[in-house]
Image (cartoon, rainbow, N blue to C red):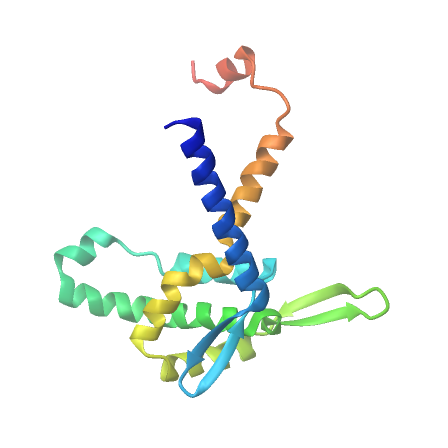
Length: 177
């Protein structure tokens, strides 16, 4: 690929990222039943809660493909509540936690997850959101969470903390004799 094509591709990626950032800063509307919610860029605490949901939705795709009807029912049973919880967490935002702030510093002193509020919203999602709506939301979940940006920042941080390349002694010590 030529340098000009790489620059054009990178410019397109940067432009898309700017658009996503603007959208998340404005908020994205989500219709659930007769209610409309606005979803904003999540904070670290929300990402932590979302990761728990997404990890609990993990399943074996090969098994699903082989016995589609029975496995589909098992998959729905295993994942539907976790998906609804993920949507609830995105809708609630900082309301997922009871946050205690120091008023004059506008700094968070502590935060505790508000399971009662999350469970109430999860139940609302389960009984008011169609599967079509869930599919549309789940397709946009990665962009809405900004998880790609978070992973990129972790990689960048890890690269920055290692100022030198591993030398031969370090490589040899990691190999079993």
